[in-house]
Image 1: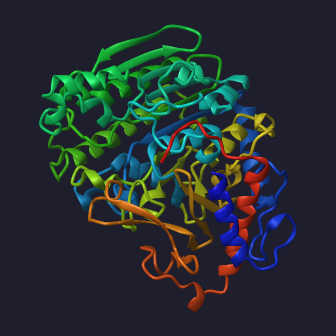
Image 2: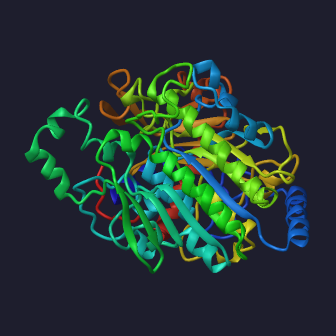
Image 3: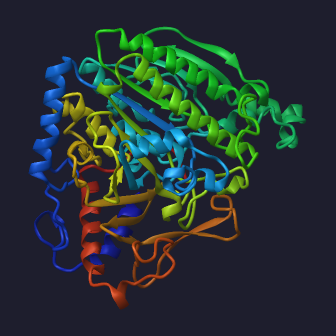
Length: 528
């Protein structure tokens, strides 16, 4: 990591013009209020307007708002109808589309490149390179330390602020004791530690015959201790396996079980005296997809992936309805998104993105995802914005909604930004000026306004092999700079020919690199 930092600093120092105080360029309008917080744009009028909404709601209802995240696994930007897909690509998504139409549709929402990094980032407000959770912890991995031992999670902070917190669905951020959801802050966990494929690979003889039909190799997999069960765990309490997934038919019904749990839990939590935080993390539509009996053939496409998109959309509708039936929808902030771009390596068992690249890359197709903020009666219906939003921002934003911004840690660097005023003000603008894009231990790119600058790129060596057959390389003599408004597929760099901001953007990357001097990366033994 020291070599990476030195290389990055060398490249951007070489390109940077004279910078202002704190390393900002003349292009930047963001203000740094703390050395441990990412600089943010300041919009006083919208800040006051959003706060007035929160204050009025609290006075009327008498309790802080509930927070519900609906996180789909590996859904492509172009899968929901509201983002150009839906019925047009063989899988209608009326419930997601309705939330987008009745809330705020965010067309420049950014995730991390793969599952675990995003899931850790949204719960800590920190880039994965800072937490060490730079990629999924896979069967057979031997990490050198528990990354959660010195991290402070959102559910833990919300618990201190009086919230009940529940994770229903996929975790994928460690399954050893001390790393489980109910070990790191959630009051209750009902779901799966692993991704769908990691569970079904031990039972799907059609796709993995060399594993399933080879008893010796299957036993090797079992000895890694990787979980293949639906788990129910409680903070400071019991953890038990509810059901072992020993067939693809059982896995096909996994999301139905998770939905039923969340719907029931919402009813229970709504009757309690505390506000609640529910993260419902779908197993689908991560490969390998197996259609639930109820939804098999229900998409126009008839392919399992598309049937599963229809299923996820239906469950989103049921969860939102459960909030309404419980009488808490008007006091609940709902955020819908995907943890990264589509996994094209499993095509055609994969989603769609109109952008270049896919899951595993720093191209837009890998990290640009659907984003919808919905809050009936609070977020003005019909809004749409292309302003920047990083999924890490829901960490800071959720704490603001809970009245707990004072709990944000100051002894570590927080990469998230409070976007409350952007989301809630009727004409809100983003408070985020830049998105920094890492891929495992490599700093890859930065988006600032409509521009995106790459210092490293992932290059596919074969179609549909965006993970399995790629190389990571430096860009060469100069960074590759794209104007995403005229070139959203990132095909034609315009740095020296058509853009005056190349050096200024390089200065912003230099300021980002400087944050690692006092707040260095964490190494937990996860190699590339």
